[in-house]
Length: 558
Ligand SMILES: NC(=O)C1=CN([C@@H]2O[C@H](COP(=O)(O)OP(=O)(O)OC[C@H]3O[C@@H](n4cnc5c(N)ncnc54)[C@H](O)[C@@H]3O)[C@@H](O)[C@H]2O)[C@@H](O)CC1
Ligand SMILES: [K+]
Image (cartoon, rainbow, N blue to C red; front, side, top):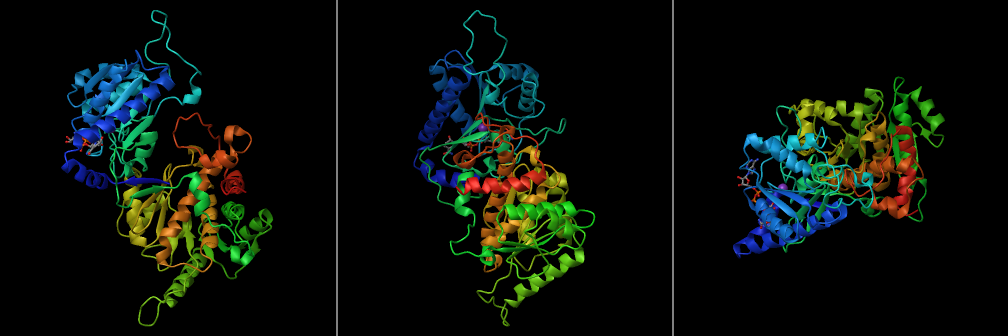
């Protein structure tokens, strides 16, 4: 599990040490750890440290202080270091600095740390744009994956013909504490007004101090940070983390698995209302995913002709009503009246579990629901039963509008964690906001941020698969029903489902060949990381729904 803390919590934890006059000691430790990572990266990617060129960008605060001290360590190791006062940069010098940045084997970003506002000063943003351009990058992004770098690449001996600048893939960008331009607490950045590109310095590796900052786990900060290494500098944080990320190795501990004595009803029964005459495929995908996830029984309430389509594709499915342990409603535009009726019934059952005097009667619970797509369009206030909502940014925009707090899709994409949290408060539900980094927010408590996916997952039907996985997890996880008190556990299951969904895309297309198994799968891919891992190919939602079964078998050690 990765844990991210707010900048304020990190500061509060440092405070007593600073009050004891240990500021310089902490900075010395931070700088030493930073320099060690820089030297290792140079050895691994540029064939050594001696004689290699580094540009160290240093800002006005302690982040710059860390970078300046590390620059001294690098120089003593023989690295040719250019130290740049990043805020003293003149706009006219930006193109030249951009070229020197592109030519360096190592760039150390010590401009801003946890004390910064998002975005970069104009002259620096311009230098970064020139740097990207010189390296042929249209968007901020890390360098060519290491897998593409010729093995054993070494610099030619002095005097031999050698192209200017490091070979593609050999440059390493190391962020100090957090990529500059990214907010340490919410991971947001500012977009340049002129070209609309986000203003941050994308890193290959971020060396962060004490604990991970929440902004390193949240989009777009998570993408900007690359691989994160935590350096222990003797600061202990004893507050609760603000952001959590489940890793593949955590999933076996989180996922509900059947007891030895289980039978089909005690494994969890999922009621599915999905699909329509127009969109029967959504029902098939959701049903297939729920069955691949290992639901004990799947009841499909969808009307004809979608019902027959599901039964033909998934013969295990049981048509019609009956007792269920969880509901999945909404994919493929099923009848709104039917969805309303089911939601009213769950709400009435939940209200019935409140005693006459208004106090909650402990122990009486209702089946939790995952509400997706068309079901989201029926919501306009707090939910009276425990639910997981699964909007993408456009659906969340519409939902927030109906809840009286309109936000454009672009606003949500720019600050997703803020809007996911707000929507969770307003609906009294778990809100899973889909994206390259999927966020799972509860009305109060830490947010989960999951990023196992690949851009190939952005395909029609992929969301229906996620709904099926979540529905199956809720059914197995809440055999005795759930109440609002269970929202944190529901969020954990939804986050695990998002991770399994993402891993399934990798699982099905590792190298386009044989599936990943066991330990390799549990180690998992790391979004945007360069560790030489393999890349997935195009994802078909139907294959994804099938692949969930192999993914779970691998993760659970089956
Ligand atoms: N406090 C501590 O105990 C330690 C802190 N360390 C480092 O200190 C960093 C935090 O240091 P600071 O609080 O000094 O903050 P920063 O180094 O993040 O910088 C804040 C400074 O930059 C200016 N600034 C912020 N955003 C700006 C923007 N967008 N444009 C122009 N100027 C801007 C601020 O006015 C301030 O002077 C951490 O990230 C970490 O790297 C480490 O040295 C370890 C110990
Ligand atoms: K930084």
